[in-house]
Amino acid sequence: MTRQRTVYRRGGAVGLTIALLAFTAASAAAEFGTKGGAEPANIEGITSVLRQDPYDLELLISYGASGGGSAGHLALAIRDPGTGDETVYSANFYADRARKHAEGHYTADLMLAIPKAEYLFGTTSSLGDTASFGLDFGESYKRSVVGVRVYGVPEPEKRAVAAFMERINDDYHARARNTAYHDREVKYDYLRLNCAKTIGSAFRYGAGYSELDVASAGLLSGRPLLAAANANIPAEMAMKLLEQWNLRGYRLDAVLYKKFPGSTYVDTSEEPKVAFKDLPNRFPSVLSRDFRNEQDEYEDPDNLFVMYLLYNLARHAVQVNERTGLLEIARSKIPLAYADAVRLAADAARSDSENYGRRVTFEPRGARIGDQ
Image (cartoon, rainbow, N blue to C red; front, side):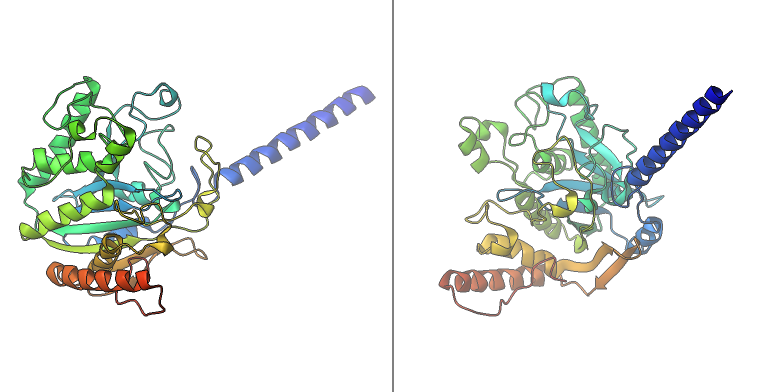
C-alpha cells in the first residue's frame, strides 16, 4: 500500500513536470514576433486604413539583414480590384534545387504567392511549416520594408504580370531551359535568376515593358566576380521600374514598414545564429563604391539618391508599437510628385556626396528613408 502511494506520488510529480514543461514551451512558442507566436491584433484594421488609397501595385523593397554587401530583396504585391486583397509574388531563395535545401525548406514553387499582411506581419504561413520566417512571411520582424505603391495601372497589365509569375512556376516545375527570359534551367540563382530578375522579367516579358533593362544570364556567365558586377540588383531594378511607371503616367507614393526591434527569433538554418533583433537592418545598396559599407556609412551619390527619392515619395511610416504590440501609423506626410522627388533627390545626393568626400562637418540636404 505504501509502495503504491509512492508510485502514485512520483507519477503525479512527473505529470506535473511534463505539464509545466509543456506550458513553458507553449509560452516560448507564443512569444510576440517569433515564428508561430503572437502577432499584432489589429493587422486587418491598419491594412484597411492603408487600402483607403486606391493603389494597384506595391513594389516591396526589403532591407538587407547581413553585413556589408547585402542587396536586400524585391517582391511585388498585386491588388485584386474586387476584394482589395493583395497577393505578394516573391522569388523563393530555396527553389535552387540544391541538395542542402531539399529537406526542411519550401521548394514547391519558384514564385511564391503570399497574402501581403502575412508577408509583412504574419507569424504563421499559408505555405506550411517549411516556409521561411523573415523571408516568406513575417518580413517586418527581421528587417524593414519599403513599399512603393503604384496608382492607375490598367487591369490587363496587372493580369499579365500575375500570369507571368505562374508561367515562371510552370517552367520551374517542367525544369525548362532557354526560355525568353532565361537561357539556363529555370530555378533560383542568387546572381542569374534572383528576386530582381524575376520581378523585372514579369514586366518586360509579361506586361510588354520592352524598354526595361533586365540583365540576361548570358551576360552573367563566367567568373563569379564578373557575374556579380552585372547581376540584377533589387534597388537598381526598383529604380528602373519607378522610371517606367512614371513614363506611363502612373502615380507613385511609398510606405515604410519599420522593422520590429524586439524579435528574439533565431533562424537555426542560417549562420551565424543571431536573434532577429540583433541582425543588421541595412538599406539595400545599389552596386556602388560603398556597396559593402554599412548603411550609416553610405556616401555614394547613387545610394543617397535612392534613399532620398524614397523619402520624398513616402506617405506613411508603419510600425509595431513595442509597448502595446499593435500596428500603428507612426508618421504621415504629403509625398512629392515623382518629377519633383527625383530632381530634389538628385541635387541633394550630388551635394551631400561631395561634402562627405571632403570629410567636413555639414548639414545634409537630403533626408533618408527611415529618418521619418
